[in-house]
Length: 458
Image (cartoon, rainbow, N blue to C red):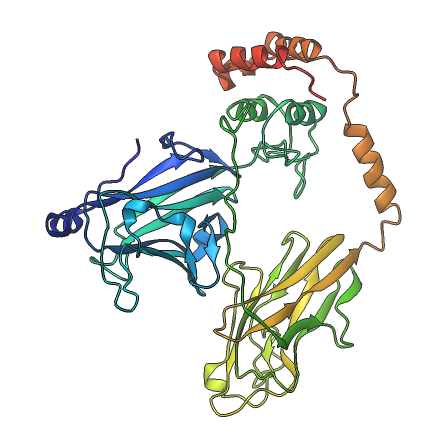
């Protein structure tokens, strides 16, 4: 079992209040997680355990850029109590609570064993497993999850749990690494033209431009992943209370929310406020994110009206009226460095309907891109509307037909026999001296045996 040992100050506190710690398990909640590289898509569980029967409160949170790589989720959200009832165990007591917290810098869940309700002050907390929070690896890279004990500090974690996450081997995105993914790898074997963003259907795992034994060895490491079936928890995210009387949308100068532009073209887009007689807004804190950052970017630098001819001047503006400019903020998005964060406040009146802000978006590749809004404002939460941008390359009239042909070229025939593919693997080993240097012999043998024994791959 992988268990983190708290620092000295936690040991001192625990002498008085008992020891509370967090254990990490695979998605089955039974098998202890072994600290090693995990693949994007892996699901784990954090279980908070204690030998105490006293009051405790703390939390699990992901902050800053770590939110790009992993996500925490709780179970069975009750909209009436705002409690995740499925994320605390019986031993935590009948007054235990798990509540979500999400702001511009930190996302996660607060947990407490005793939440007084009226005159109900009886605490029946018992030693044992108290809380469970789920974790999903969503991007390759390092992700830190902070475990907080509020008896020690409200602002700093007792310690960080670090996950090293590698690219997905689930090339067809069906939730498992199996024969179908192997076929996709085999269909790209020895290609040397892999480029960003597709990287030969994702099979160029080290992104060196070619598919070779290194990629095959990396694939084998997660063959037949996951070992245990994963059932996603229900009701991961609480419903966001949206006020339909307040709408913030992304539009072009003609109020269109679906447009077509050419590759390398730049266009000014606007955040537009629309309210009914029942709606009003005096604070907004929103972020614009890009569905595919390989296809476009936002100029998230502020425009300086005092030096409009400066070639390094930005283009993003806060336009809301009336407002107090002291609170204006423009900068990189919280979730996405290529996005933009826009903030404005008016202390004395509501914003007028119309343009709240503007920014310049540049198309950097062909394809469809969606610019979405995320709101970090407090109640009321406005209704948010995105914009769809169709991006075309005017110099490539055969783009669609060429893409279709590329798909056909890499498609494997449907009558391939697992025994034949296993023989193909043996030929690779016999003729390529790099195999023994790249792939452990035992892993290679187990992989080939598994391929031979595959039943009904289609």
